[in-house]
Amino acid sequence: MKAVAVTPSQKKVGIVEHTAPAVNADDQVLIKSLEVGICGTDREICTFVYGAPPSGSDYLVLGHESLGEVVEVGGNVRNLKPGDLVVPSVRRPCQHEGCLPCRQGLQDFCSTGDFVERGINQVHGFMTETYTEEEQYLTYVPPELRDVAVLVEPLTIAEKGLAQAWAVQSRLPWVLHEENGKPTGKGLRAVVLGAGPIGILGAMKLKAEGFDTYVYSRSKAPNPKADIVESFGVKYISSLEHDVESLAKIVGSIDLVYEGIGVSSVAFDVLSVLGLNGVYIFTGIPAPRDPIPIEADQIMRNIVLKNQAIVGTVNADKAAFETAITDLGIFMERWPDALKAIITKRYPIEACRELLLDKATGIKNIISFEE
Ligand SMILES: NC(=O)c1ccc[n+]([C@@H]2O[C@H](COP(=O)([O-])OP(=O)(O)OC[C@H]3O[C@@H](n4cnc5c(N)ncnc54)[C@H](OP(=O)(O)O)[C@@H]3O)[C@@H](O)[C@H]2O)c1
Ligand SMILES: [Zn+2]
Ligand SMILES: [Zn+2]
Image (cartoon, rainbow, N blue to C red; front, side, top):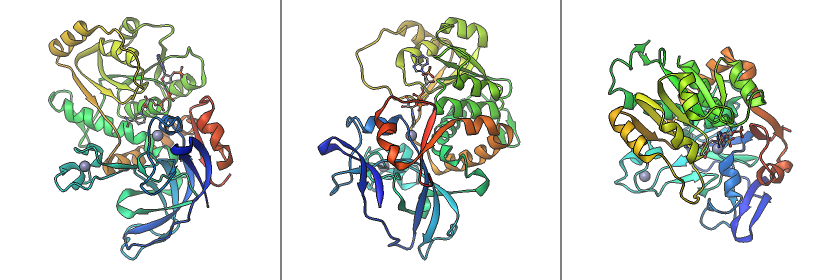
């Protein structure tokens, strides 16, 4: 069957012939790929600076943002049946007995670094006609989310990020005022950096949680990303029109920043205007470059004198996948057009080289196995 792969030893990217897998353990599920999202990580792997094939294979099948349909289940699979829609997680635990996070199913916090990741590092990904996966790494998706569930994986970054922020802000009991047993952003101001898929989905999550939410990104409005953001009630501010001091004046005291640009100069500029007791969530992964000047004294003074907290977050756990699916259902009810508009275009697998190697266009492009 066909798969999209990188072959680092030959510096090749494209369609390869890949052996079709079969269920060969009781906890395994055979899945037909429906859609796979393409992101910056895939594009970076295609420049051969990152990513590794499984041992014994020349190539790595790409793809970590998958929506699939169950075709067959092993004898011990309890909660899935043929026809169900599922989304797989990405990271798989390391093998060290002493790695407490991995032994508890929290491999997103693996403490040895010897984890592997499907479609990224030492395990084939999902950009292939069928794949197998253990039931524990799959999350059920209700059929009404069929058109948007390929966005679950990028949304899990915001889900985990906000869960981390609430854990940190539990130090502020008056902020963590709960509604229906859950923390709420009501009365708080959030700034999202970037209006790519990570930023837009993060802004939807924060808006849905009740935050007064702003997106700070580059291009001047109107533009398609700003239009989507404004359509669900979030204010879009262009960095070409407003510097960070002006951003802080417009927003007022910033309680939370969700960084989704991966541009360290902008990220640290905005850190310098984080408010009192604020929390800053870094998600961006910039490529290493020459050192840049930052306002280190001011930032350090603020962190101390304003009781600020900074968290980095990568990957996501099962709980984040479950909340992402619940939240996609909420977004679908509240803002169906905005949510669907994040998906720019669906392409057949034959378009993989253009999607992975040419200049990025649109917001989220997808390979559809039904095109
Ligand atoms: N932590 C994790 O687990 C995780 C997972 C996935 C992704 N990420 C990271 O998340 C980041 C965002 O991903 P994405 O897929 O959403 O990226 P993307 O599609 O490239 O979007 C980046 C956004 O940032 C804006 N931007 C770029 N440079 C800027 C600047 N100098 N000033 C202001 N805005 C600027 C862009 O503006 P324009 O629209 O004007 O171009 C765009 O809206 C990346 O760094 C990625 O590595 C992290
Ligand atoms: Zn991705
Ligand atoms: Zn581990």
